[in-house]
Length: 246
Image 1 (cartoon, rainbow, N blue to C red):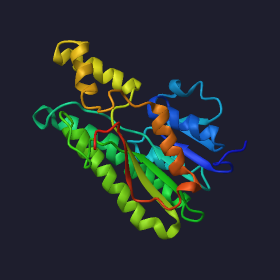
Image 2 (cartoon, one colour):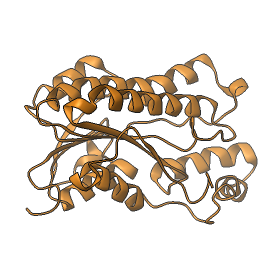
Image 3 (cartoon, rainbow, N blue to C red):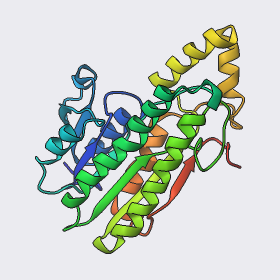
Image 4 (cartoon, helix red, strand yellow):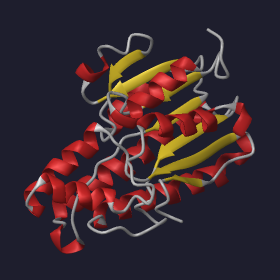
């Protein structure tokens, strides 16, 4: 298969749906040999052109065993995350711990396992951050913003540590993206705000472009960062947010 990622081995986590699924499909389209994982393997059943597997990125032993199969990794796109909705007063200890473990600690585990497979030939790591992070504070995102802010910090640290190994590491920071995760959050918030219309307004009102992002738009930026054409870009948090951070 031809394409700008031909001959590259790419690993995509949380590839069952949403952004992760769109990324896996785009990297396949661009010619990469894609290894796609998700906690829910049923979501991967129709991703026929990828090598699929179950992976719990919160389990250190599982992550280590998964990456043992690779001699070389050229591209890693880490898409695992969890959105807690609420202020700090509405964030219980278990909410905080879950947010940090799924969003931040999973990245620590996955990147730590992947980097030794990239040090010889170099490669590109992309983490899925968010504008709700160290980039910008948004309402009802206390735990989420903290975890994503930590993820951006980790991304920048990895970029600094491994630039001499020709490993690039960047974070793609979406705004509000239409996905199964968003639709579930809208339904959850509708129960709190008194209806679907109020919940939709909560999310749409923060998008200056007046629309949600598309998973394919996020995947396109990830594919660009994965390819050699972006070879000069590392250690960056790139916002793709419909104008939230204007």
